[in-house]
Length: 557
Image (cartoon, rainbow, N blue to C red):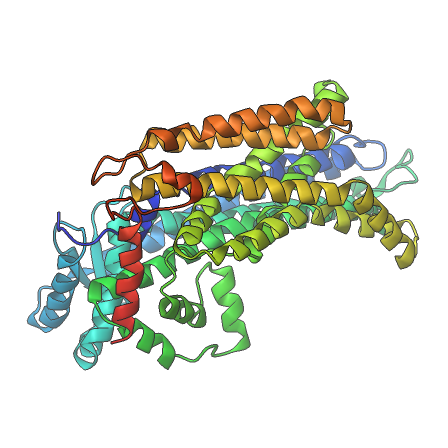
């Protein structure tokens, strides 16, 4: 393996940044959407079959819903597999001398990477401007595929083309090309199936006759009524599905887009030039109004966003407003998506409320855990980032109240209340508990941010696995206890739990007391006050700082 500089994504992974917890949480939320929709089917179609809706209509809806989902899944998988197979069948090894220029640039880029050697170079006659990397789902069978016209592109501007090759090599370094493609396809398939099931459900509702079927039903029950009061009554449920869909889409969008930005930075680092900056500057910010939407829905950053990240050399790629403002809404949405389960499972109401609140809070913590690492590193390298993290905490805390506010407005309008009456109810609800929850969650997130930053300051980018697990487990325990406190109304009940939170916080910091400098073996307990520099002069974040500084210097050339 080449002794090139560490990949920024791998370096952040060594510091404890992992996207897996958030991916698991979003998967749980997506599954809950199907359970929620299934309960709507059960409550409106299955339950009243033979009473206000004919059995034939219900059976047809079930067959169309489930059968259509299977067909859509099969067609999507077949199309993806056949397209991949057809593209690979057209690819040929680029052994001709006309590809020597590209091969030399690829070898130069690879020599600066962590790959053992240059990947296979292939060409495709299908797309003259093709330039992509590919791997199998295990990260093997690596290749860079170019179009025939790219030979002239490489000759005309070798610096730009070398940086573009560096972007593709970055994909191969992480062995994540298959994962990124899989995420894009899985998101598309999820929303395709969910939309189909919802569409069939809405059509099925149109055959409900609230006056009853009568003794003789014509047309085997297929008599459309489309009673608008039924749809209006389900408006709140549709809002829950819409909000939860926004959360489900937000995470994979940020995951894939952040990966693309990281590959741009890595490509510039491997090519040791600012050619990508020049390349994106030459591109129009937005060629048409549709380009922005296409980039968004295809989970791909726009040229303008890629230019901004490259110019700022932003390795951490934190989002202080949009990401927490959407993703933090999953905590109350989990409560809404599981509404009605308590009665079905026959669980005590108080126990259910406390347990579900704690579990939803833990899932929120896991969904935001990667951002704690990002902001922790940002805070250690730029102290003014504390303002941005405080904003992040406030927005995330406030976002937990957004579903409640939206549902309050929708139910108020359906009940015939005036806007003034609705606003008064919302303000009263915030005054009695909403503000306290926002303040409590803000303090909790700030505390978790400090614990994460202190751990990073003590261990840097070489935090051992056991220390990462230790701090995450006890951090999760703090979150569970904190949400239990928020679910209790009397301070006499909250006080013991607050004491437990304090004790767990102290235990969480134990790894910091055992940390030692890798250069002189001195204690690095100064991480408690967020210092990353040992008395011997060793900086535990130096490797990450060098990536940022070297990138900036290369962009200034």
